[in-house]
Length: 117
Image (cartoon, rainbow, N blue to C red; front, side, top):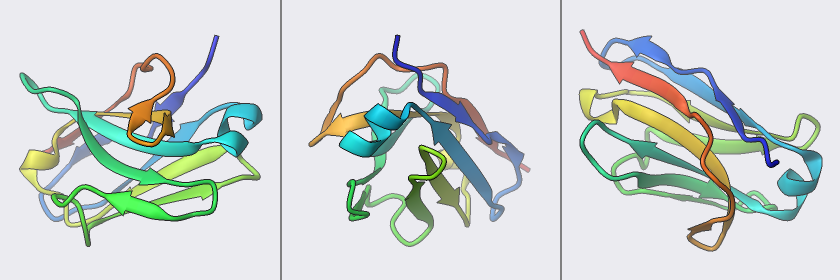
C-alpha cells in the first residue's frame, strides 16, 4: 500500500505562513514528479503545484509568487512553503506522485489548512 503522509497544516491568520510536508517511500519519490492539490469545502480538488525529479516547478496561477514547492531526496519528502496566505487558501491539502497532470495513487488523508482571523 502506497503511503503519502501529509503534515504541517493548521490555523493561521491572513498574511501568515505555513510549511506543509509530504513523506513517501524512496522508490516513489525518486521516480516521480510530486504534486500538491487542495480541496476547499464544497469544491472539487484543484492543482496547486508540481515539482519534477529535476526540481522544475509549476504553479497554479492563484498561488504563483506566494507558494514554493521543493523536494528533499534525503528525506523522501516534498514541501510546500506557503506565504501571504488568504482565506481562499483554506482547504485540505493533499500530495501525490504525478505523471504529467495525472495523480498516480489513491489520495491520503491530507492536512487541513485554515486561514482565518
